[in-house]
Figure 1: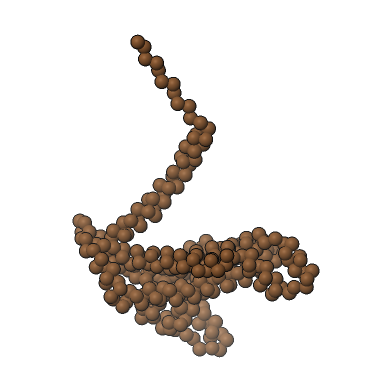
Figure 2: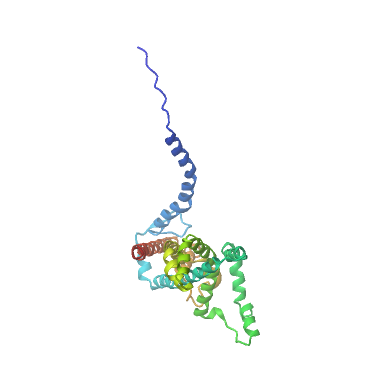
Length: 299
């Protein structure tokens, strides 16, 4: 009795296309796993341990680091400062970038130049631009030199919490304005121009067109800018590190900068992991609240 050979399975066109698609996106998911998911899981694990990065293995301590976070007033103060400094940066960036987006949408021969010039600061190296910024804020720096020229007293910026927060906001706005303005511009150009034509026929003013046509037409763009702004504000670290270093007397210190000091400077990996986890959870909560409350009202 002879055995009949099995006929080879013929792969359908849809299956071949699906396999090809998976092969294309697989490197992306591997990249996300290596640089996102694995560090996230490891950070969650470190938050439950006591580890200085030099010992053979972390020592499991349960929720001790989390208890220390909420029972030690310093960490809650840093978290609150991350909120309000980041909130001020987000507010000014959202409003000013919207105004700039409106200005960039005006027909002009030089609009290409202005769009490029607005975006350039966001791609400049933070270390270089912040060093220039710090040099301008020195006692004998460029800003105090300008104040002398116009007959005003000089200011020791590093000794004032108000002025250091002010310059943090200025620098944040200078770097973040371009991308947000370009996104606003894209949203503005997606609005049906016939709506503005009808408004012109009805005699609507510029302010009325902005209020009743532009702003309602940009609600989804605004949602994206605000959500990404919340994440950016809660991750604000480089500005504090390079410009203020927490001065004066720790009054501009924020939780992200403390995570860096605990993990890299003080070798307290366990506490740094717990702080990172808490900050991530708080950011997610803010995003969920925004989705549930703000976007539901818009619908």
